[in-house]
Every structure is written in structure tokens, then in C-alpha cells.
Image 1 (cartoon, helix red, strand yellow):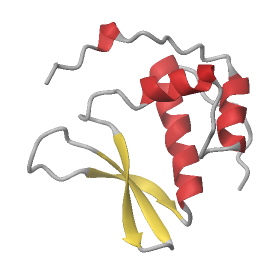
Image 2 (cartoon, rainbow, N blue to C red):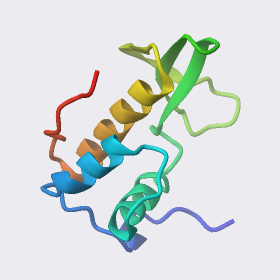
Image 3 (cartoon, rainbow, N blue to C red):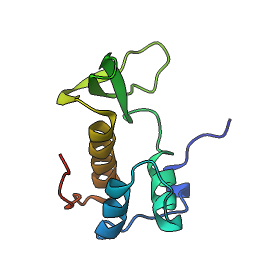
Length: 113
């Protein structure tokens, strides 16, 4: 397996491209434009350590956000106050968090909930 190289990413994300955030929010399951697919591929190829993930608290009813440790056998750390009543709500929040982490800019598109 090749080690992750944070400087080897082929897609830089322009944090001002709220059109891509709106596209994702409007259809989170795809299909996506080529530009949005590149952004999602970049978001999904970050190192496991510190990556956001979902945990099912109550099947089909409650979900919680955690951060992965990146180490085998070390449990993920819950993110305070981050619980959701739907997978869509959770995935939208994760998208916004990853966008901010990678671009340094917040998503300014309104939440549909």
C-alpha cells in the first residue's frame, strides 16, 4: 500500500465555489458533475487519522459523528453535540466540515433542514 501524500493531491478545492456545494446539497447521491466528483474524491482521500465518520446510534433513527484515530484498535472519538436524525443531514454536515478543513472557508449554502 502506498502511503498518503497530502501534497500529492491532484485537485485543489476553490473554497468560493458554492455552486459545487449547492450541487451536492441538491443531490447527495449523485450523479455529480466532473468538477464535484473531483472535489468529493479529494475529500474522501484524506488520511484516516482525524477523518470524520458516522456511527449508528439507533438504526434508521439516530446517528453520531466521530473522528477516526487512524490507529488499529484505538476507538474513534465522538464529536460533541454532533448527532443527527437522518443520514442525509449527517452527510451534509460532514461535507461542510471537510470543505472547511480543506479550503479554510465555510460553506455558505443554507441548510435544507
